Length: 244
Image 1 (cartoon, one colour):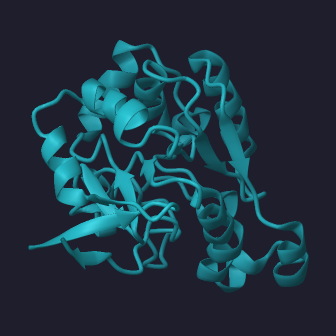
Image 2: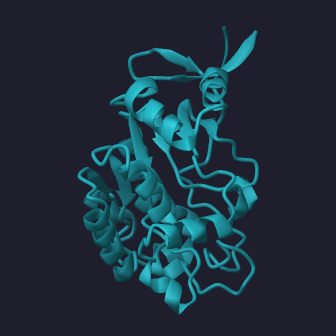
């Protein structure tokens, strides 16, 4: 029998099918509790952009463990409103372990000294300012909890509750949530919105590569007109398939 397994730094393996099976009949809260305190205890982190929908996942997690590591990539080219929103949610949700991930200063001086690489190659800019430091930051963890959803479309259309990317579990608790369900959750718990939503933004990344929504979808303002839909931090370079 073949299965998809993820490797931990210590060499242990866990079967994807087993993790999915155990999650089938549990509530979202029970699953989060199991992943945080049992299955991946001390080997799991949350990935958050502190964007327009981030408060939902962060609120869900904070009700169970406010000390779980939350990884936030600061590219040095974010909107100041995003930094302010990060600080607001940290305070509101009492998060105690938000870790800001940034590029290596030497890499920036060598590869993007003028801060204009985005205008030449968005892929190269994302690689140096997001993907490279993110890959370094996630190495200690066997699993990451993300806020990705199928309604985002493109590469996210076939997300499952649990996937494996590059030998590491990616848990997507909101994978099947609709935009309406997200809005209702924000309203029901009185969670603050990202301040740029009021100015017409539906998905927010770096200031140079984010435009206001034209109504085409929840992420239509990202890398507008380029065909690019992902920065690359969640893209897979292949599944780890092993014989049991």
